Amino acid sequence: SMYEGAGAPVNHFIAKDSYNRSYVTLNAKHRDQEMALKAIKGIHTYLTMLGDYPQDMDAAGGFWQIADVTTSTAVNFIGQEENGQYLYGSILQVNFYYHRR
Image (cartoon, rainbow, N blue to C red; front, side, top):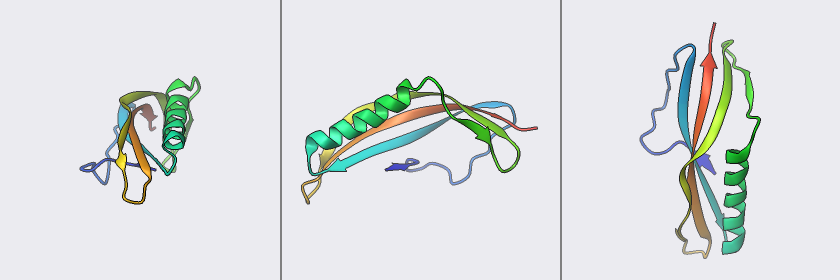
């Protein structure tokens, strides 16, 4: 799952021609501990090792481009739920450009 962390603003103001940073929390949950760890590590590694990140236009005519994705908090064991599922998490820092005419 992915979500913005607690305390994050509901709305963001992004200035024209700006370099921005956002944080994304990744969680993995599975009854098989090895499967949960393998899944989150795979996603985390894939996103931080990409050489070509997405870019596109938004509905307001602005152009955005992800510059890079880095590790803010490495994959770590969070705990085991009562139902036996293991939970792992990590936080990625997403740096991106935004340009609006």
